[in-house]
Length: 156
Image (cartoon, rainbow, N blue to C red; front, top):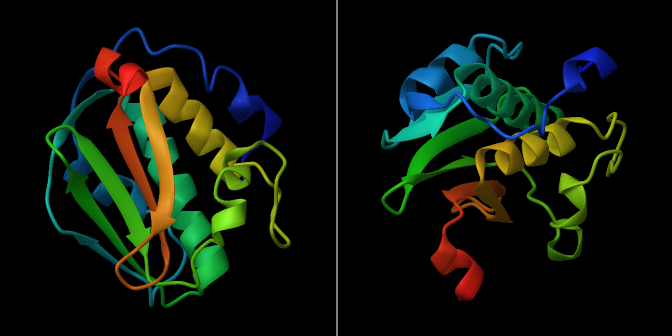
């Protein structure tokens, strides 16, 4: 669970990004998951410009959220999206379409959680200049897609 101190600066713009392998960051973040029956699959790697510590925190929050909402035997998949984005998906119950924007707000909880985890994810994505899309995974669970925002993404 995130402390208020750990939220300090979460959405401050990233000014010291470096190339980070999503596969390596996911494997590192997965070590914090306390669910021995859960599985992580990295379907395809990509390299993103990121603050490694904040990227790890983003992934940790997504992984913990998957376990909390899908159970301790959840299957999580990290994949590449387009040329420069990535996605984290699970095989849990998914997020209803009318809640997909709200789950990224600080304080919103659809259950017994704190409402901080996905707010942290959203703040970290914003700090990196990434858009976040919440949709269905191929297995009917939740899928979070991250893409760098470009001038084209604001025009289209």
